[in-house]
Image 1 (cartoon, rainbow, N blue to C red):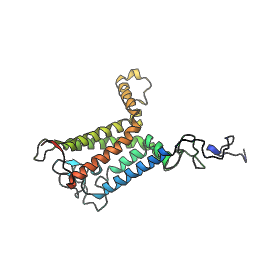
Image 2: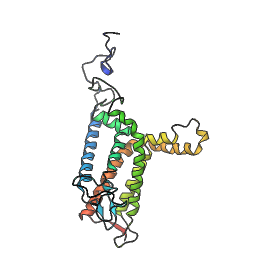
Image 3: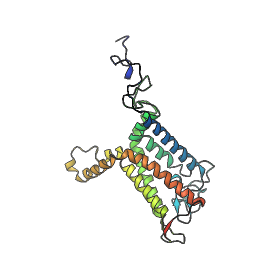
Image 4: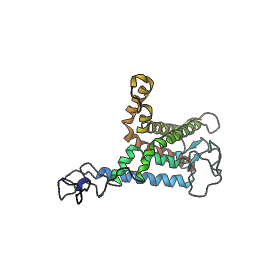
Length: 271
């Protein structure tokens, strides 16, 4: 109807008009604030470490940080290139894992949980339940760049491949200083990180949909139904795993950096 008031959201016709932004009296702003602080701090650390090109490889024990894996440049330290060196020397500030890091970032950016986290904290859309968002219009994920969120399922496949690479790195790290089998605290940290990364990746909503989302009759597909049930149980912890893996990546990288720089000696159990 011409001249009709078609404003969306809290400005829609018929909505109650109140002077206050919200009637909530609790500290609803704490969670979005902590989310901003946590994500910004992690991105700052990861950016600096990925671009530093130093202290990413412990030659004695074959520890390789996930922030430099796979190391595919001839600039990589001897022994750290587990899959060859198809690229020449990298200039300063170019991450050695430049081939995989963008896919990991896109996998997390399009993750269903992370969408909720940064929509609420960075874009305030909405910042909390029963708190009006400051935006005058709402288009959902129907326009660029948010239209690209639908590519999450494809980034999931890339994340699986990269998790396989990280698993290989963790297995190669069972190396002693004098050769042969070796086992130290670094191996425990690398393995724990890999297990958590697999748990986060497999708990992804896209993984759950791929396994059983299109099945009309679970009884006809008992194996896929059982797998779907396991992934569904894991999916309940997806939010916690999203944050835990950020922490495990920092701990793994920081430990390897400290050992590689000589600031810390690896606690060895065998060799």
